[in-house]
Length: 220
Length: 241
Image (cartoon, rainbow over all chains, first blue to last red; front, side, top):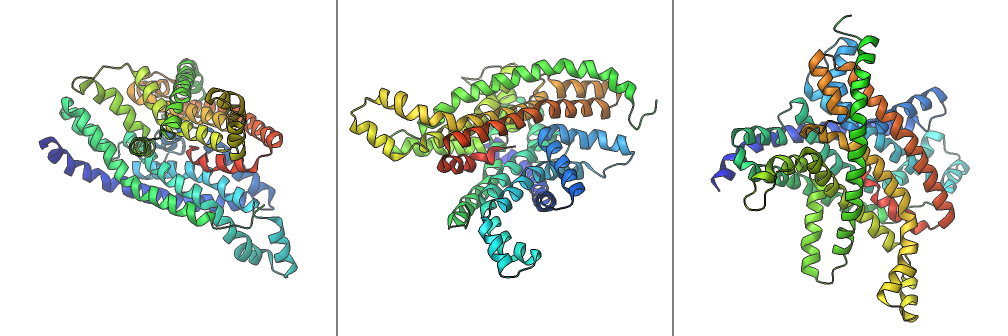
């Protein structure tokens, strides 16, 4: 018990870092996803190819490799410091998940039934109106379950930022362990519990999103 | 040769060293994958246990493993497991990576199996009962032949996911490609080239395999043309990372 009361406040400090990294990655990641998703559907071939390249590169390589690349290689290559390990971490996570999510955005928009677009055209809507009022609202619903799943995946991947020296939950746990090796089981178990507690609201949200999306979508 | 910027000299110097780690990375991928494939059955059957309390406990354990970081689980097995009184055993880096990543991904693989089994229509179960099939006959002749094929592309996807996840093992000292690249980096203080090589190797290996699996998936879809299966499998795609 004394171990727990000693470890708890130190891990709590890490929670703050984990949560800020998570929130920043979510915001930027989803933004990237929508931008890239729409770019891949654009009529401009250069834009389409370019985003295609981005998506394949970030999906084809591993997140941990990207993280190290951003942290070690980018400053060397362009001779500029990315600012801090915070931005290296957030950028790597959000660009990685942005690539995966953009495919979901694209896939959902494509899978909205063709009749919907045709009907909107028949109603003399402009292409912007068609997307904004008819196709997009239906596509978003299809995206929801995946969006939920990716929230949990993002939470899990924030643990990687401890490897580039950010003081998140895992990093704090590591420091505690190196101070007292025999307590390692308690410490890591607590770290796992901390992550699980952070994941619980996301799990709940995912289930909720799945329910919403099941309420009937006009798709094929 | 400057400290900053790209140097082809360093690139070619570090290439053989990084490549050395590739074999271990591939071996670890296969080992983790096989472990996850086998252990995945455990979760599938756990969800079919008739006693509700056990099912409930096991499904929470599964949720716990699924939603906590594999990196922490890896650290737990490598650093903390030897310290657990009574049952603790010291594991070498490779074994702890196989166990850690294998158990983590088995929870996803188990769901794939489940979605495959669920995709078999209720009528098939009823028919096999009406024909008075034994449990063994029912599974081997009716259910599994229909449940397995639709899961194959999804299982292929997990192989690629696994390949991209095994570099995590470099953190506990498995000398795969990322570990080698880091070693080179810290010795020469040049990270740019070795890490770029790692990224290129990953791309070269995983992109063609992803294309292959996409093709396979399309072929399967045409062959079975089961919309229900695909939506079920789609629901499980959350694990793509």
